[in-house]
Length: 208
Image (cartoon, rainbow, N blue to C red; front, side, top):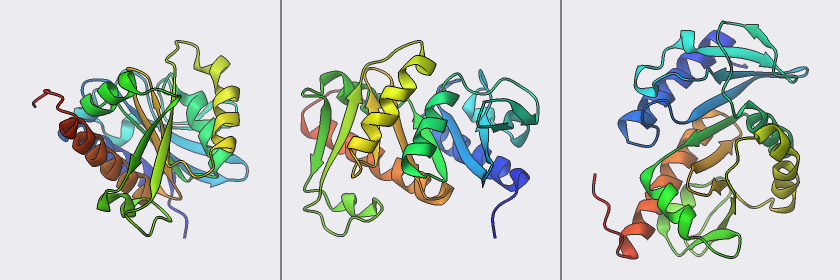
């Protein structure tokens, strides 16, 4: 059975607080969404400007495919257009975006348009991956203040990279997704672990 908006709002608030506690979405950074229904498409998504450590179900609104609020109060995340683009391109059930230290550092140093991760056992936590020999390549895109204008290009990029489980925004953070919220949360945990492992292996010196 599909989750109701109220159930998804509760679950998204819990995921947001979890990401805050892990240092992946500090302050008002990050945004999180889950599909309420596919046809017509509606999305439960975090509102803008909310401290993720204090995120509650009331901070989640339901929007339609035109980004109009149809349930709840508040302004949807400024990156709502990206969430909708990812849902369309990937048929995702949930989309999560974090601003961790390690994703930010690695995105800054990534060259050739992407970050490649391979050889780690934890890669098997990504959907459909069965071996540590998997080669995961996360596209890296440039940051912008106009995601509405950038979204069509990102949707095209996602369709051209069907094996990717996420992408990085340079000096900004990670977007990942899943068939449902549980899988998307697992992808956040796996990718953030891998980012830290890679960063420490490269001798980067940040400490919590």
